[in-house]
Length: 159
Image 1 (spheres, helix red, strand yellow):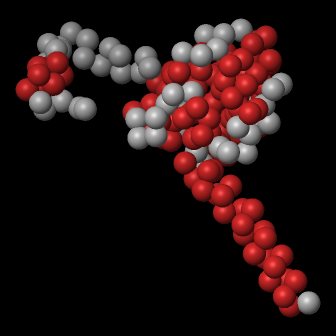
Image 2 (spheres, one colour):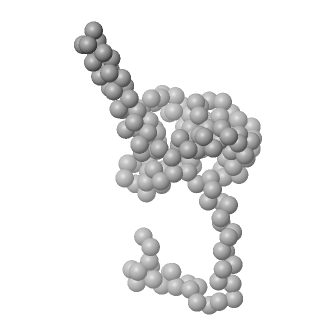
Image 3 (cartoon, rainbow, N blue to C red):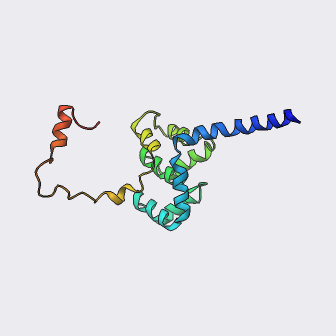
């Protein structure tokens, strides 16, 4: 009996460890799912606005994936790889269970690339809300205008 319990525990660990490793790179998706499920219409509107698409396309993708964050990833990977969402969904279905890193790689997004790191950092649905804040921060001031370009030329800018 004791051997059966140990076998059961080991079996569970074998099943969970790869999932945890895959989820680790994109652990932000869990929070996005919670948020999306709490405000479905708001999430749909954010997706439509962020990717400049209509509700029909949003609903079509949401109907073909398991979780709302998966829909975000379909649109984001499509944008990054220059493929339509339908193509990304095919990759999603054929690589199901392997994780989004494998799907990204299958779409030509190389691990270690800036695009891949952007995916690992999280979604960008909220970034549009803050786009206009501070836009006029330096209005009427000459200080700073064009300095970022000069700094980049001198090697002092952000990389």
